[in-house]
Length: 52
Ligand code: SF4
Image (cartoon, rainbow, N blue to C red; front, side, top):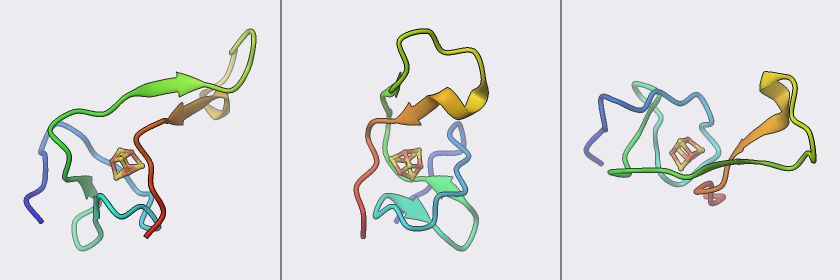
């Protein structure tokens, strides 16, 4: 898979991850939150994630 040099990602369980270099291979992703009032990095999610 061709990596997108603009999107680093360490989620190797995702089917869009280039695991050898830890980059996303999508041309764009959607980031969101599962919180009503996000205050920390842990509050954010990649909503383009799909499990392998
Ligand atoms: S879709 Fe999201 S979680 Fe999956 S590799 Fe890309 S940035 Fe990472």
